[in-house]
Length: 74
Image (cartoon, rainbow, N blue to C red; front, side, top):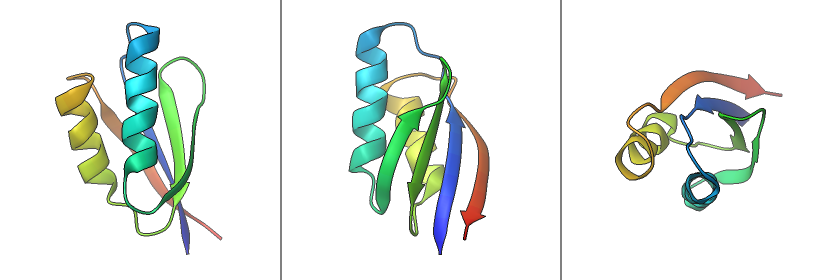
């Protein structure tokens, strides 16, 4: 079953956007990731640990990363 994970991240510059995309795409189980709006990233994948991805974003990019939703797509 595929998951759709939405995370809101406070991004300041283009470098932060690239770092966010790299972190999301290298997470285990992620098939695709895309920005939706300015500060929201949507990831699709299977068996993705959404809490771990959010924690990694908080550590590496922004202290204000917030897990918005995790939904099953199927």
